[in-house]
Length: 260
Length: 257
Ligand SMILES: Nc1ncnc2c1ncn2[C@@H]1O[C@H](COP(=O)(O)OP(=O)(O)O)[C@@H](O)[C@H]1O
Ligand SMILES: [Mg+2]
Image 1 (cartoon, helix red, strand yellow):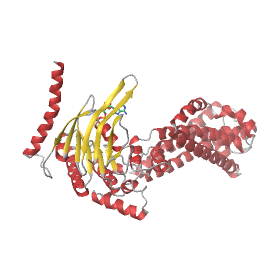
Image 2: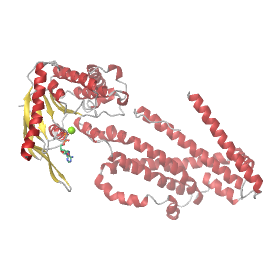
Image 3: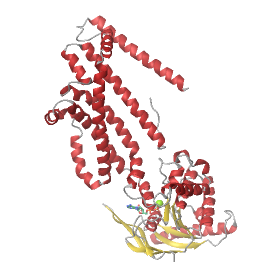
Image 4: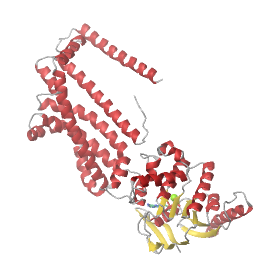
């Protein structure tokens, strides 16, 4: 049964990719656009091969991944820690909440002028951008997860003499975990989106820089090749955290639906 | 008396509504080892009273003493069992039962042994590594019972513990609770709105009425156990309890006439 589903799904994916490439090729052939305006599928494919062969892709990807991990993990650690403290301390949170509500809708890109001024160029702007993108969803979900812990769990803990800090690790964190895990997932997606933006301003390496670099040398085939790589690696990261998430949830006995 | 409730009231202040008397001047004495049922319609303050005895909440006026000491906070000596079981879904049956033992100064091995002993007592040894969501409602409530008994409290407070179960499971759980009570010599205060359940289980039934919530009367159930649910004595007490509630209705009619 599962094998059949997998087969069907693979067939669908393959078909949709081929249809997309077919339409694309058709537009290129009928439109006779300038190659630098709309590169052909074949051109992009050779561009991708070129990037893989000369090692540029791997080098840039590794740099991006390291920046991503640093920014994302910093967001996870500070978001969860602050979230646990503020979620438990409702009176403090009521002062901080308005500030967060104002800052949250601001795109990390809007901070670029300050980021460059404060952090210079190099790795820092990209890392800070990723941090900002990931931090708010994690903070807010943790706060609401802690605030919404079923009062019955707290009564049970109280009854059995479980006090802080045990209360945090035995009751609050696991009870808030589903919400927190969900936010880690969402934050991962938006952080990856802003990684590229961050690398377009101050960096001399990374996938974002690779695209800017290709544009500067008028190689739109390489630009598109870079875009495709970013999409694929983002998808793989997403799948990876999904597997991690369901692994932990299974261990904690929280049943989850498995979707797509 | 072991548990002594004196003029205990609990008022809530609600914005817009003002003062609500959830519980008005309750007086009740409970002896050690007694099985008491608090019986009454929803909203008559049963949970409020149980929470006061548990120490989750404090009376606005009056006091509650247990073994001579005024109740001010929860204690491991009186464990509450909730209608929705209160099991931690991220822990297995075994780890749930271990929860209460974790704040005691005993070795990990001893803790496991005690937990397994109480899981055995409620007949769930085969399920000790299951998660709560994998068990039926009746089995989950047995786990909650095992978890409560494992810390060896003297008092069990149960807030409609069987309210979410179907009629058949309910009856077998009533048998189970009676058995555990007789074997373990606990003092039990058991909240229910099911008249037959109260007659089957209680030494004394505390009849409560609402608006404001208060104790109307206390009825003794003087029969030996295990009680026959269809026996003449059983039905006679049941009818008396029915009458208690109907009496209240006719009081009101008189009042409005
Ligand atoms: N936290 C609360 N705030 C305000 N009113 C409450 C609160 N808890 C209970 N009450 C009120 O007290 C009354 C008794 O409630 P409760 O003890 O839960 O009744 P029961 O358990 O018998 O159904 C109800 O009218 C209820 O609305
Ligand atoms: Mg209630």
